[in-house]
Length: 86
Figure 1 (spheres, one colour):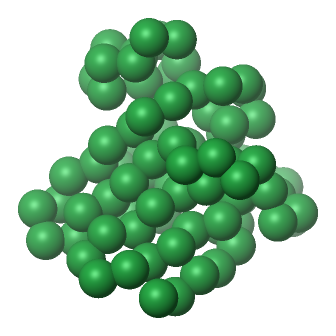
Figure 2: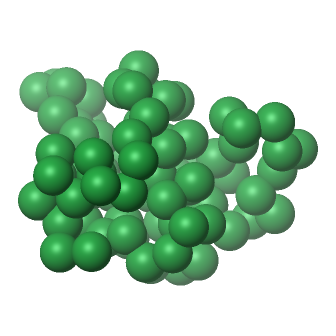
């Protein structure tokens, strides 16, 4: 398993260890503040977003999306595209 700190895409220098990506087998998982919030499947090229807890978590999710070649989303777009309950 490989683990690394996700880097911001919005001009910030870092997330200060608050956004961690764990790559295991063919899936990369984003942890925001220690909570699993998104997964990327490298084989199927599918992104799954589980939760949007705060604006900061949304920023982490967007950096994760961009890191794997997906477009950033507003909270509303995340809720619609990934069927989140808010």
